[in-house]
Length: 114
Length: 111
Image 1 (cartoon, each protein chain N blue to C red):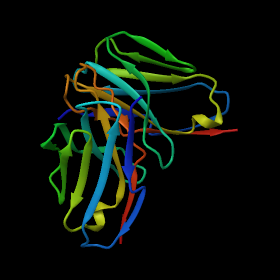
Image 2: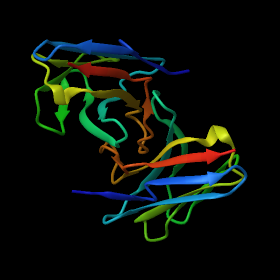
Image 3: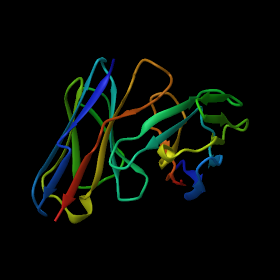
């Protein structure tokens, strides 16, 4: 069965510090991968998605970036965090071979920027 | 861009009552998905709908893909305390295109 992992689970960072969040998927090959951000009590905002290694599409221009160094690894980064970067970051995956785009979410990372 | 209107934004109901929420779109979707998110966790897929008019159940949950392909509803029968959470609808226009999410319905159940 497929599983998706995210770490760290929680993170408190000062403004201006760098960021690296990691997401890995097990039990599937060549998945589509996604990063979402969820502000407190709000909906899901798609940040990046990837259909393959090195292929990243950005949905929202901001000071975040994403990379996919391996087939089942997706990394969200920032060189300098802003207060507005605080939120709940969710990674998700879906199969690339199906016409149906059911996405399965990881447990999330709670980021607080102070 | 495509947008989803999800309503109601929040609901307070008594345990045992039935619940209904819906999503409407200005565009046609080929897939509708319903998720539930518990506090501090990632959303969990409840029901996936692939055809216009399709009605699908998952235990006490029932969801339908609207005939016009621009709407979907989710019903929960005989609510229980563990139904508390945020319910999201999501639609997909075409294969390998990102999902569009509604803003969620926050459900509170009063025992």
